[in-house]
Image 1 (cartoon, rainbow, N blue to C red):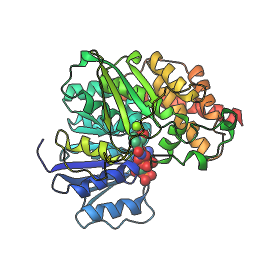
Image 2 (tube, protein in one colour; image 1 turned 135 degrees about the vertical axis):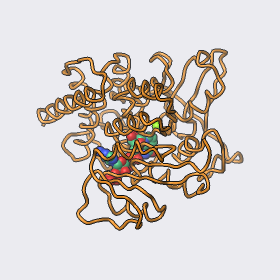
Image 3 (cartoon, helix red, strand yellow; image 1 turned 45 degrees about the vertical axis):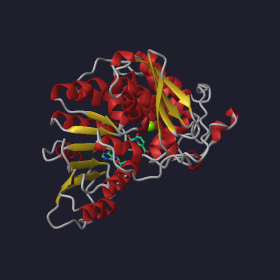
Length: 384
Ligand code: NDP
Ligand code: MG
């Protein structure tokens, strides 16, 4: 693919969106922003549109007042228009950085149009991994991982045969409660959960990091992206968040990718792949000492990780149900409707109560997703 690459960013106002804009500012000759979307933050979206002179600007929710956009910009409103923007034939790459299962439909729309997707939205693979991968393989569109661990694996396996990959380990910081006594975990507040020790991210994924549901979602994401069975997928706690993944090959050699904890490294790698150019952030300084500590997670501290691992092994709709219940439970925790300790209980009860049916189309998946959400809501109400 030649440069400049024309880029549509879905979720442009979020944390990944901001990191992506830094990469575009660094490489204006290589990346041209032509389309952006957000859910409801019209002011921030309009400011991005003006800075980059964006052609198509999309908002899911109708704004109270018309945003001030560049004169030739087209303004699109409504959830259904998101897929239209994702499928825009002018785009070379669509970066999907919306949060939650809402990422599934636009990811599929972009792939269906044959456009390469740089994927930050892990939930779309958790909810519809089979359909997403089949669509990409049918249309020939590529999925380039922007999630830091998956981008690390992607970099490590370039030029290697798939059958030589024996095992991969995704690293995790362990979140803000890594060393908190177990009996104090029930009572942690949203404010404490939103203080991540290493990464600056959106609220949902920050809570997911504290429970390690995030790493569970990432195991499922890795299964689809790299076509690996659950027994080859591992998690290691690595407090400094410098090594993002480890890949062990069948000759016993282990590759890893390292960079400081900023998403600009993974996003730039995916957007400019296979080229390498100067990055946005400072990298590791070889004059400093590196403290690389790794240890396996204690699942009694991270029950959400255990539940995600079980859902990964179960397959079928279990990952979809895990994701839906987690989204609902995290929302309830962030609005002080349930305690931190209840997040895993709500997920577990929803997984146990769900009536598992086959679902293959996007319509089936989305309707099963709604059923799982209703169940989780009911469990939240009955836990009050
Ligand atoms: P943020 O909450 O910071 O941003 C979310 C973005 O999506 C915003 O632009 C938001 O718009 C938009 N959005 C929210 N809801 C919807 C919806 N229903 N439909 C369409 N757009 C919507 O999230 P992050 O940037 O942290 O995360 C985005 C995705 O990337 C998630 O899937 C996350 O797991 C993944 N990810 C994030 C990492 C990070 O470092 N942040 C690292 C790796 C993966 P508005 O601003 O108007 O609300
Ligand atoms: Mg990650």
